[in-house]
Image 1: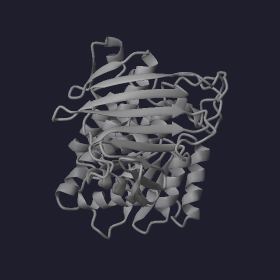
Image 2: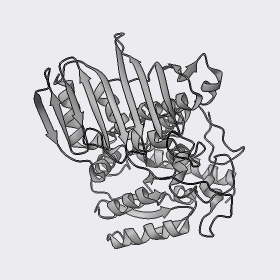
Image 3: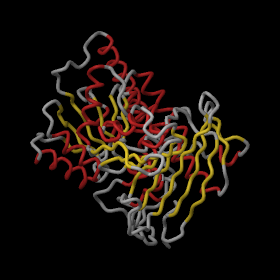
Image 4: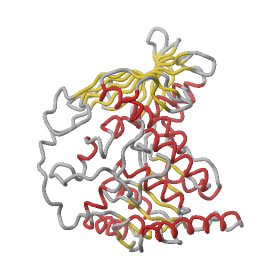
Length: 431
């Protein structure tokens, strides 16, 4: 199928799906949801395996430009009792299937927004991994795609569906530490040196052209795939967008800010690793917000991805500072400390995929808004993009929350968007 006819088919498929929905043919409470999983790395295969165990889901397709990964994901679904999904290479082959109700997108970061927008325009509901976008502008385009197609779009920040984070935020809202003025995130863990790669030929089982997609074309190199793309500007968002976004999202939630920051100041760079990584291994960012009432709030991010130790007993965590106390929130619990550090309320719990999947699937059936709706995560992902941008340019930024533009800095404002490959079929419109 040619690119133009394929695009026409996708638009027609999306129109048909919307017409069915409008006529009352939406999924019922007892209908099984037919899904495709796009991106079959560790996270994508985990999604596929988890979904395969559900009685209300049929995993019909798994898709990855690396045939070994697609085949392995298909076997994982079969081993979990989920039948025999068809492995595919090109995500358009999944979107062409009228039977597919929803897709799980667990690709590299540079594919998140293009794939999600194409899927929504094809009439599919979308679960897309974090960060939702590769740059600020893409997040806005994703919101528009979800809304114009009336599709549910959930982002994979699963803490939004966890009782652990929910009860912690409820305690903050109830005044457990008074007025919350500052939130802090730390991302302290031990990554590895990725070395210095050389251009070469991709393995036969990998369609590197499909993998690269609408990003600028570049030669294959030995240390780029399959995980190290996180550390390259063209494809990833650094560890702030990779792991830090989870806690950044919770920090923004607990701080109670529902808008973009107005000021961003970051310091960061390669303090430890001597390799091809382009993003900081050491990173500190301060974000300042202005509430509708004109009050100021601050969110702080710390990153050390060379640290063989944990901070406050947690490699990744949150702290909230209020006028009457503080709260520490980790992976399995939260604890309040009062005005003189006396222990206060606490809670325990965990974070897992099934509740977040259930929330998404329930919203497909009900038409409700998911816990990590695209509009929610666009705000959190934008913090990651702005923090990376400030460190990359070595200067602070003033940001217009309404226009989603950097003020008084043309170079920085240009990087709110990205450059796509000319004429590529997946490049989003409106960038």
